Length: 470
Image 1: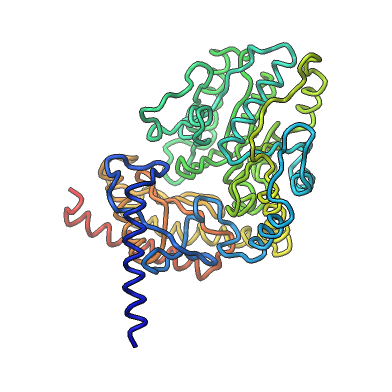
Image 2: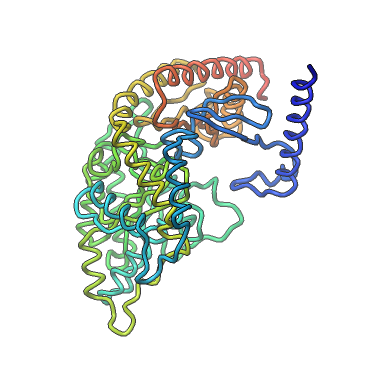
């Protein structure tokens, strides 16, 4: 009779031990240093399907997909078995030089089949950040091998997010992420943030597009096209707030890159592998064929760390033809590039996605998800709702100044708090509530996310009306 009570005591003790260990010994990415040492972290202990469970046993619907990456859901036995089987067969061997592994070779072939156009060469890395680094270094090598090493400058955009290595962090254009670290400022330049939301815009899409292109071409002329290697761009600025550029922007910026001999690197770390209903979104959704595509996250459904740069045949052929005879080595890569277990997991992930028609499911469910979320725009504390298929953002405001003001941020945090209390996890960033649920969510899951979000918005609005945020 005492076993359940004793078990509850044991679980409670473990819960507090985990939180204490976390507070004392772990430095989280993007940690609030002013709260370092507080026992405030939610410790996630287990997960299954679209749900995660904290160390108290409470269930949450994970509306952020871990961090954009859990596409096939948690506890997928086929992915787990693929990991285990590869580990039994061969857990690791060096990927350098003329050494390879069966999973890396097979995955590279499969990615070449899935990628658009002539992006047939895969360079594996460990995550999105290292893939971005590798793509930019490839652009530098490409021009240097042609005798043009001065073409080394890189164009990015304000509100962009590309990772947290030194170079990737320097490419990021989110001011909130720029703290006391050092950032490359010599050859990295940020263009205007390209978002266009017709629900709140004060100008037409054509006017916005014209201004963005004028800004880009002006910056190219200021720096000198002869000095610029590449333009790095997310099709949709994900962590920046799910910012969608005006129609025609992607094709027009690619045309400018072609005009000035600048390589176009499409950062599909978030948008690839089903998030927008296709394995790659650049060509299908945005009518562009980049010189390189960077992918990570959903490539393995988050089950293993893995990133990749898909490089066009034109770039590879030029690099091969122009590599110096005295040292023709492509000296870029990582100990865990093409890790056999990670690649085997990615192959299984792709096979499941194809077999279960995951992309078709997203194509059908994505518009429903956004249409239901947009109903929340009727609230006076919702500034706008935007997104694309299974990536979305609800932007909060107090009715005063828009954007990440102190009060707007506090309001969004209150919405997030109420969602969490009701068992739904959304991602709070500044005054935004960002969502990217696993691709296997169904209509019932979507309805629950929207219902909980709606109730949380109503509660936060009451708090605002009662002056509790002042």
